[in-house]
Length: 285
Image (cartoon, rainbow, N blue to C red; front, top):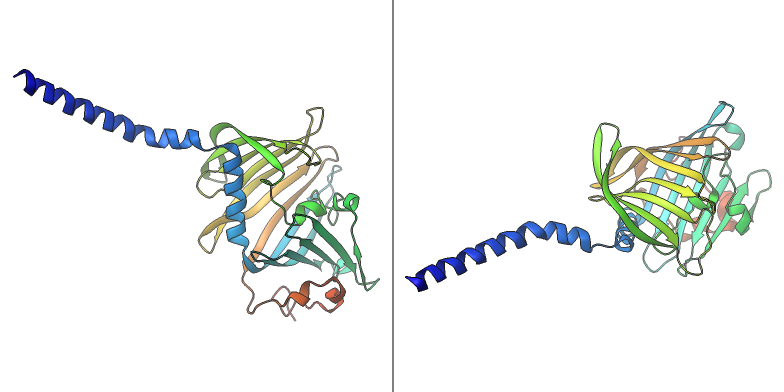
């Protein structure tokens, strides 16, 4: 009888332990993931979504501190392939007085980035210095540097502050809230940052950038999402420069694969004067 009771007790303890382990798997897994890993997952997912050649048409709606507004429309052609440099070409479509200008970004395998601006009147691309890369892109609240491709996990250390949710339209997304600080030897504007990254899609949903005195400098917030090849991607976002009072809402009108492979010569700075947006579906005849 004693042996029987002992057998039942052992079985019961095993069952209880099994239930506790099963119940704790999710919690342990969530605790084990680090902020750096969350940031790496975000960059990795972005890499997956943007691999290959992609065309997109975007509208920038700008609002200045005095309440005046203006809009810009762009066609973008991007190339990303493992083991190669990443390219992004942005063709200015509207308004007419800026049509034909082109911004070109080349992210090298060593992490360095070169950028050029082509103006039709000059017919000659001009490479942007590091200081110019930090300037406003086409009068928006975004810099050339932010338009060019880059990854956060190579520049920042991350710490999970909390697991929470963010509201985007009528949807609620579980997110990791992270505090970011620059890695040793990395110099960036607004070094202290907070970001909210969606748990399931690893999409950056919201960010805040702070200056050296802890003052809020810049914000970004996703306003709506859509899907591209089965992945959750941004449809609309708003970024604001607190100091200047300027904000820009970016709307992705289209996001597609081009009808044929893009030759690398398309991204050569010396060939920018020959770029035809109609050929790549970025403009109509």
